[in-house]
Image (cartoon, rainbow, N blue to C red; front, side, top):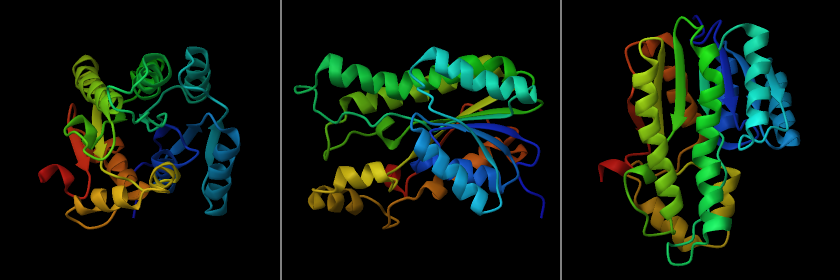
Length: 256
């Protein structure tokens, strides 16, 4: 069976863990040439080594702070100049959001870092990758919104996170308009995906875990690979006529 991303040049951000790691490994297994980045060089190297153990190759640029424009340009240009084009940009990296309520949230230390770590990182990567995406015969941007872009949380204070993911959703629709017909842009809206970061968030709060679990019709938390399979579809030629769309991968949360 032909690999679905054979001969695709794919940038995947945040490969050190979670959804980014899942996407990088799945893209490599589907035949893509993967160039990943992460702010944590050691974690990125671990992902590269795991790929190697599976007979796969992931190229790594790390450390790379995606809130710093010079770092983003260095990362994108490394891939673009080496391969001449970029076929897929998967913006999986994001800073852990601050979960204070509006009344408790500090502008400088909580609101601004959340918006920068969830919105600026997407803008900068798209901005610098755009010229290389234009050189692809079928370019795809895969951004990550969230169920938080559509519904509020009664478990955590999510003012900044909801605002950020709503911004990513709106920005991606505009990118789809500006990129057509050369570049497609879509979002995936994950539900609760179990990663090291989410495990830490629930470490001392079993009641919050139970409340979140109760909202999931499919009665399990998501995995990075659940998201990665959707990203593979959106980066592949199978989705040639899909742009400006959002794909909830959430165990059914948004239908309730």
